[in-house]
Image (cartoon, rainbow, N blue to C red):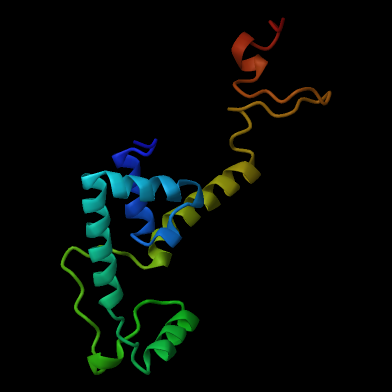
Length: 156
């Protein structure tokens, strides 16, 4: 018996297929030896070969002539709302639960909150709530100005 376990053998077959040329070179000999010595491994290899043969028989249908042009047109327009060539100019119906908003409607509240924040910052309305650099060029206070915490003449 070699050092290859059935679980590792199965994982490699799933990942690499049944062709030994696609197996990791460092484990190829151990896999072949296990397939010859173990009935379970031989059965796994037969199943993997059958699956590989099925996959090789499948074919991919060629794309329609206008598909490439339609994709490029949609990419240039920056939208996925293009009419498919076979729809006759009709838009497909939207699902009843399709709650997507246009991008500008979703971004509007964010832009408004940004503008309010800029306005509050520039107007100085928040200067009494958070510390601003003092007259002597001292450190910025993060929480409250000392005057608010201790009172005007009671500073430590």
